[in-house]
Image (cartoon, rainbow, N blue to C red; front, top):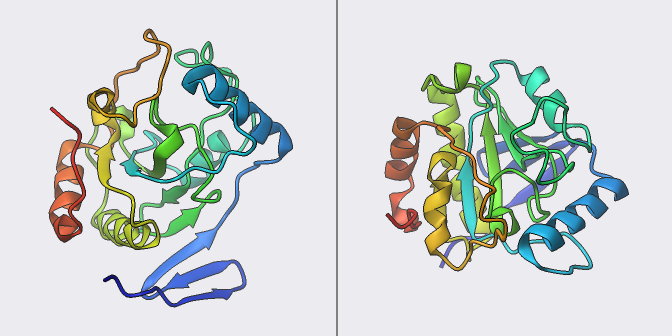
Length: 219
């Protein structure tokens, strides 16, 4: 049996054992909540009263942007920015993520980790998203050792908080999850190709959290 976390709130900082999470919320008011409900109805065929999810997946990303403030600014607005022509036809709901990890390993919580965020096609309704500042040009595997340590700690924390989480997935692997019951996307033409957060980074995280028994996507 996993030991319960001792959690203390001090100002806007959450301490969970040695893990420190700074709350830095993005805009997520009634308009964004209603847009999220509409997304769930359109893409997953579910009529819901709220946007609470039952996490089953931890999904790791990189931002392809090397600056925290600029990355935060992209996720903060409720509506999708005009340059996201690759996904705007699917919904005007802006992309989001539950956590963001800066280059120095600082962890920020952007929204409640049991609300649905738009961060991955087909899996949002059961996936907690962790963005990492980096991936320059959407190609470079440049995430730092500090980010690696923080991702490992965050995965362990989330698995302990939500014992039913059973998958750890890199964004580049998301289409492999179509073979599982967690895949809900109804639009067969709505797919993108991803590289994040890099194969080496995923391999290193998986090695460190192997005792948790988290599954990899089907091949």
